[in-house]
Length: 152
Image 1 (cartoon, helix red, strand yellow):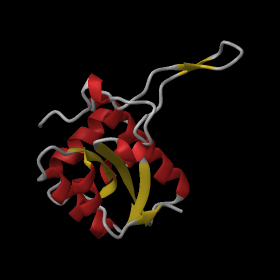
Image 2: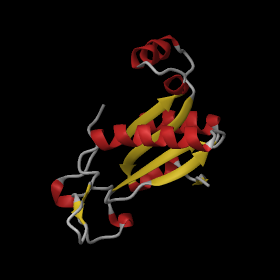
Image 3: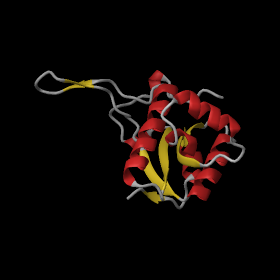
Image 4: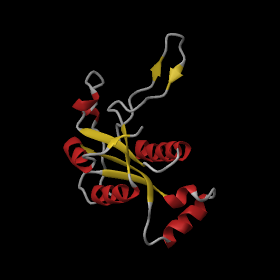
């Protein structure tokens, strides 16, 4: 997997999110009930934040001195798609150079033991996805998600 991320000199906290070179989208299966959708989105966001350098901004502090962990300074758009469109998006994104992909297969929400998830995933020949997270060059990501709407 090719490393995808921001170089330190690219991080400009004074610019709007649309000025960032990379775009981050999380695309959720539109058929998921809200609780499962949120769970899946949070899980792939965690994997994405860990893997994409420079994605999170610096920690902040409010007027009382209470600390707040850094958030994605370049933004993140959450979209919805059908299961078929999600699978196609994942395949195209995975084949696109300079694009990072994190996904949550259905097996991840079917078990509470991570090793069981890995075993079930290793036995799956036709993987279905609940959510896909994509980070890459803005124009490439825009093409990949063209026509998708914001998650309601």
